[in-house]
Length: 262
Image (cartoon, rainbow, N blue to C red; front, side, top):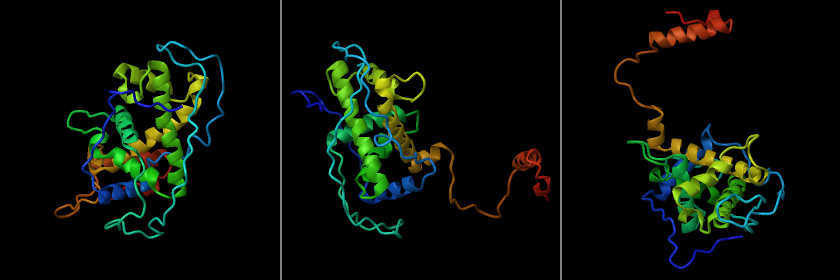
């Protein structure tokens, strides 16, 4: 199933000033991130299960699982090779593939997951949708597997929104959007069978959004990561509190011989 916008139905728009060079650098940082989620989603999800007839009203969740049957042609391209210049990356050999509607939906979901908090910008404000567009458009095996999962998850959100509330996801009111997100947020004992496949796909999408956000300068600043920052004068060394903490941990592990020695 795919929802076609009705006449006059507004689409969520997404615009960014991020250059291609910037998005490629952030994609490289995302690929190296320890926060990058493990492979999951469509290929490892359980098969569709029918538990009951779907509801006919627009006020409740469906009781029958649905999953978009996307026909995605494989993306091909030479890539960057095995030793790319990540400081000054060459012009990308592949085109970006997400449509404006997909980018708008992705931006909305990303901001639900990482909203603006005070001076800390939201995921879309720092270009996370653009980074994920770069990610799912790259012709590498990991990215191509994630592409199937991400695009299926986005299509599922529109299908579910249409079947529940009669409008694509971006056209819903926030309580309606959150009602759907709440059903797929986590895969646990309380997850209904019809949402099991989507919860696995959503876990991958959430992990990519969060990892991409914390790969940006704004994200690293938010968690207090300093990185390779020059220190003027002599290196001050660890604080007394840090030394005491290290000594305590080493003692608990039976490694006192490695305790700090002045």
